[in-house]
Image 1 (cartoon, one colour):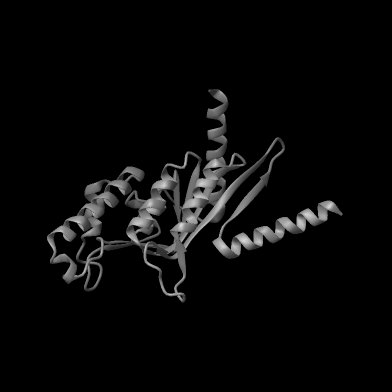
Image 2: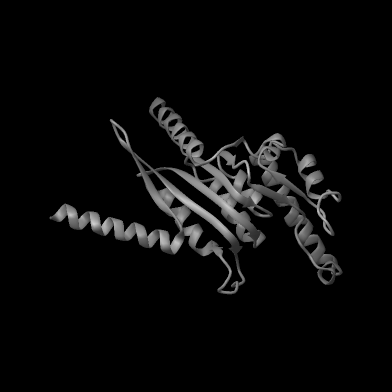
Length: 237
């Protein structure tokens, strides 16, 4: 009776976690141990310092950052799976989340489904290994600024430095060079009335931005592989 009540409570807690944060722990039963991975979803628009309209589907950075801290501090969670389908959003908030994923200290795998646009690009490459669905797209473009804003030299310099931070982060956490990433970012031939590049599935892999084309099964298998390798390293110390 006690086990039944405990199971119902756990199911209720998991449902509430999915409802509120779009994320949950995933357990895999092995013969010798139980490993857990945590699924973190980054969907819609990344909300930063400015509150977006309620009808917008958003990922709030004040929800994600404490979750990443908790994942890092929880010994039962062995790895992180990041599912991305985002149009981008607040640059500083997105970059802050990306930095936390990159420095988590635990194995991580990302999977781009649908889209990983704008600031979603650094988020996708922040994991130890990245996948993209064959139908998913990634849009690379400069940091947005209006003609009014660009007229102020100090503000222009600020946006330029922010852009350099993004370029450096992406190059550091993927196989693409800073030079090639800037070329894709400033391409004038692909987007109408704008500059930038759209990469679809395999194209992102060819540009060495994403590691591999694949779906959920491949992503989870790769994460457990990284967890096993990490455990072996810890035991060898």
